[in-house]
Length: 311
Image (cartoon, rainbow, N blue to C red; front, side, top):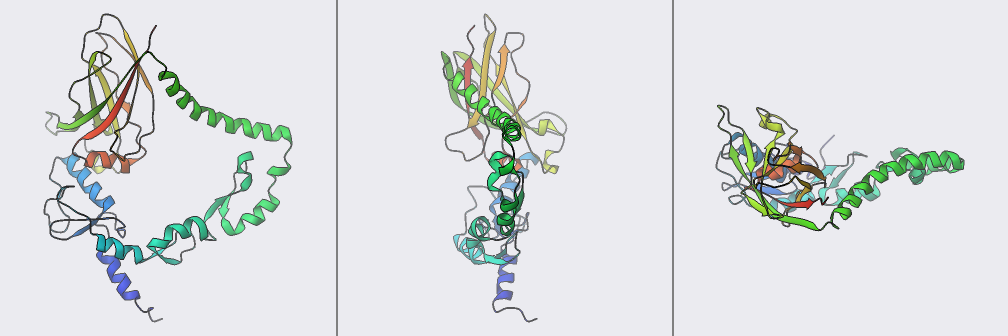
């Protein structure tokens, strides 16, 4: 079968804008000083890997230095990519990238959808074109009140866990002694033979006490750059001397100018002169992609909240 008019051109252009790491066509691009292209995801991944290996990040094509200040976007390529055909993951038909998201969310007859009775416990997931047939035969609307109550009780338990976090935050906001500050984690290397990356903030004052935060990657495993899964954990250290135990709740959130996604988690600790540092606890970032965003930055800027618990 002869190729459709323009198909060879589209294929050739697609290969030109493939991500150098992900091998996916770039929707958002970065361009090195010699004009070579990287998709945004590949670019962040390269910067994060260089940080972990204590190397200068380089372009995979020409090995020139790359950084957020040296590279720029290529809007012409991004516009061209938005018009390239891309395959729908549900129906496998080809659509321009600029229209693909709308098609997959609203128009595709094979997109995965849920039963309208999911709010009373129906677990069905299936293609949109089967939805009407399923809902007509769905057994959940005919369940007895006692059966529905049992299902709803299970759903309420999950909802209570979510609400517990927000209620805890609102409760903490009513405390008499509350402090917060912007913190900047700066990268350092250990003195080991095989150095490891860690982060530490300068000393800062909150609640009339002096503190320091430390962070590490993948719990200081030997070669985190070889792992696809990346995490950060942090530790809060009290540097002041205290006359009585200092019980605190604390949490880290993203800074005011960052786009990293962090789910709030509240931690508790009682600080004394003998026990003045917490264990390392997870920084609750959403996934490894968000972790790479933090590692690719020159410094990690977050916001710390501290709540002193009064006896």
